[in-house]
Image 1 (cartoon, rainbow, N blue to C red):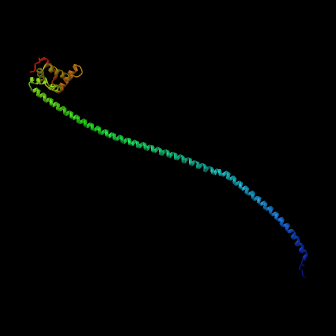
Image 2 (tube, helix red, strand yellow; image 1 turned 90 degrees about the horizontal axis):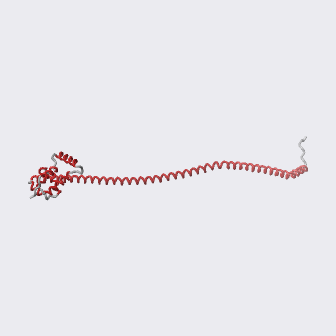
Image 3 (tube, one colour; image 1 turned 30 degrees about the vertical axis):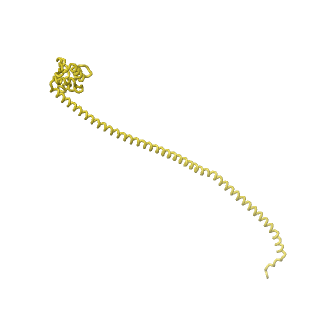
Length: 254
C-alpha cells in the first residue's frame, strides 16, 4: 500500500498564511517595543554606570589633586624662598668681600706710605748722625787747635820778660788773655800780674776766679779746684796768682 500522506489542500494553507501575516505586524511591534525597552534600560544603565564612574573619578581627582598639587606648589615656593635667601646671602657676602678688599687695599697703601716715610726718616736720621759726627770732629779739631794755640802763647809769654809780658797783657782782649793766663804757671803769672796795671791785674784776677768758680759755696769751689789740679798734675793757678798779686805791690808798667 502506498503510505505517503495525502497532500494538503490549498485552502488551509492560505488561511494559515493569512493568520501569520496578520500576526506578523503584532509580533514585530511587540518585539520592537521589547527591544526599545531593553535598549532604554541598557542605555539608562550605561548612563548610570558612566555617571557613577565619573562621580568616583571626580571624587578621586578632588581628593588626590590637592595632595598632588600642594606639595608641588609648596616645594616650588620653598625652592623660590631658598633661592632668594641664597641670592641675598651671596650678594651680602660679595658686598662684604668687596668692602674687605677695599679696606685691605687701603691698609696696604697706608703701610707702603708708612714704610716709605720710615725710610725717609731713617735716611734723614742717618744724615743727621753723620753731620753730627762731622761737627763733633770739627769741634774736637777746633778745640785741639785752640789748645795748641793757647799752649804756644803760654810758652811764648812765659819765656818773655815779666815786664814785657805785663805790658802786652794790659791790652790783650779777654778771649785771649784769660785762657793764656789760666794755662800759665802760678809763679810766672804772678810776676806778670805784678808788672801789669793795677786795674788790669785786678780785672784779670776776678775773671780767672769767675772762670774757675762754680755757683756753689767757696768750699765746694775750692774742692773742685783742688781736684782739677790733682787730675792735671799741676798746682792750682788762679788762687796763687791772686795771692801773689795781693802780696806784691803793683808796679807801674813802663
